[in-house]
Image (tube, rainbow, N blue to C red):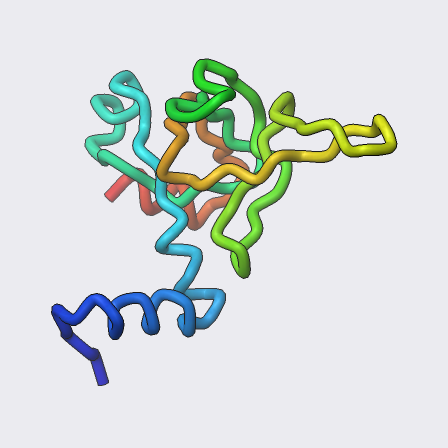
Length: 118
């Protein structure tokens, strides 16, 4: 049964308790104007190997390829967006998909192509 509610607490509960295949839909990002005009779609779930540009935060303007999508944490890892650890090594800095813009799509998946052709 579909639950429709306005209450913020129930909205948050539904977001955090959602199963992973439903959470993937929450990890959407805007597409560049060029892609948006080409496909007639404003946003799309972020996938591994998509190229994105960071639009907000300290890394604003950085462009890189999505290395990993973390459904449980609702974050993505982007190549070139790292943070230094205390021991001097680097690790990926988690970025929320709402803070990025997709600039190039990874189109190896047939299902994704069908979504774009609709």
